[in-house]
Amino acid sequence: MPRFLEGTIMATPSATYDLEPYRWGMILATLSLDMVVPFVPLMGLQLPSGNAFTLGLRDLIREFRSLQAQRRDAELQFAPAVFVWATRQFHRDFADHFYAWGQDVFQTGADGGAGAFLWDSIVRRGGLDGAKDDQSPPQFVLLLRDSLALRSEASVNRIAPSSAWDKELYERQQYDRFRNPMELVQATIHHYNFVSAWQEAVVASSQPDLQQMTKWGNSEALLLGMPLDRIGIPGDWPPLPPRWK
Image (cartoon, rainbow, N blue to C red; front, side, top):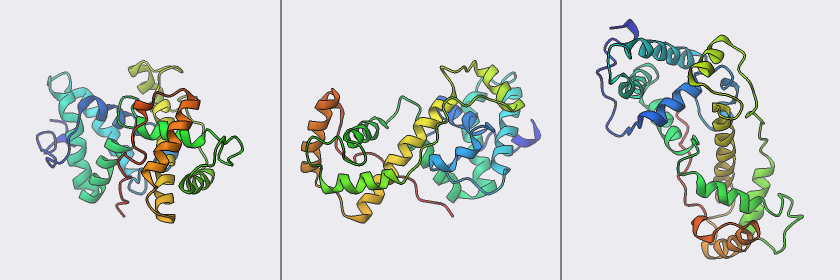
């Protein structure tokens, strides 16, 4: 057994971690990229200081690549092994934060972020300054827009790999400018900005009047051509994970 996996591959993380292999393989590969590192805080993930997490993750990726030739279940064991390592190396508080972020914040394009995405579009339709509003929005929306206006959103989806690690992973995964992990990073930054602004607006005032918000939101959704049965209840998405340190 490779040295890095010794005592880890057969270990089992807490039963509270439901680690779907494809989703978590995508998350972990994305976080290993040099081009992603500067944008991790903008995605709402708090990693341990320094580069110990990234370097350790890469070691695990390398060793699992070797292990795949020997074990058919290697891919199924990868994410659990990462969480065993992360818990031992950085403590359980970090592992819990990381898991909640991966489940509820990271956007793969096929998960539960649709409600927040649609409500973000609804809130922004009239402009963050309200210049294009056709009707007066609820007071909560004004607070939410103020909070969103303070958040800058880096444009990252067209960044190309430059380091040897990034280029090799792009080639291995057959990524190109139309399908690449930076699209997921962009979507995650956008999701984090909206949900964090929503939570900030809740703290600044109180929970929005759901009946009022829904009535106003339905009118905006119709102007955007959205099917009303898809927009969901405003605020009905998982909260952001608490900081772990």
